[in-house]
Length: 236
Image (cartoon, rainbow, N blue to C red; front, side):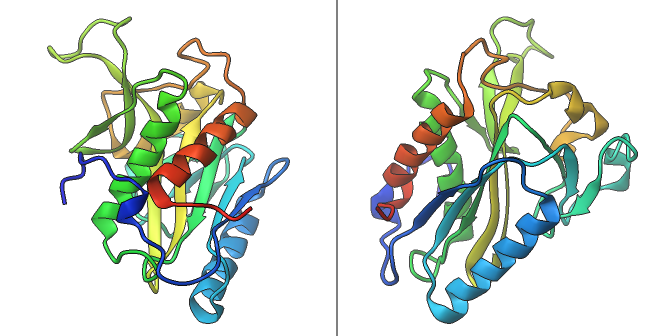
């Protein structure tokens, strides 16, 4: 399918299983604990028909490496702990002020289409950002969601733009793990310890960096309503 096509909940009919659980984790979640809990829930979804889960967390400052990560893209290995994530993609940063949303969704209950799933994650982010009048955009050659910066000079004749959200997933027995990360108000200098997602020549931004007085709770409300638009209803 065309990744630029708008996707709504009618594209992801849930054929079986209980309603999706929505959980917001307080405080900072250690990355090894997040991996362990994600994997356990994904296995329970596959083996026992447990409810699907959208799990919203924040992490302490850290870097993660995906299966395509290049050693040279870890610019400052001593700056923060580095964890092998097991997801697709390259290096990324997580830390306070960034909302990480892990999705454990069973594509066998929905639609066995990886490309469409990634496109839907992009659409979810774009729809949530639109609630703050932020225009997030896809790029065919760069995964994630991008924001054009008219306040800066063009680069090589193209508008300057920054990445505001990252996507990295893994499927195990058609159950998804990992998910998305949206910058609300992280320390953007922390991204300088890596080449984010292996992409050079572009910056990183956040909602607060764009001049918006948005807090984590505000984004969570937007994410929840946008999720139902794209993937369907959540449990009560």
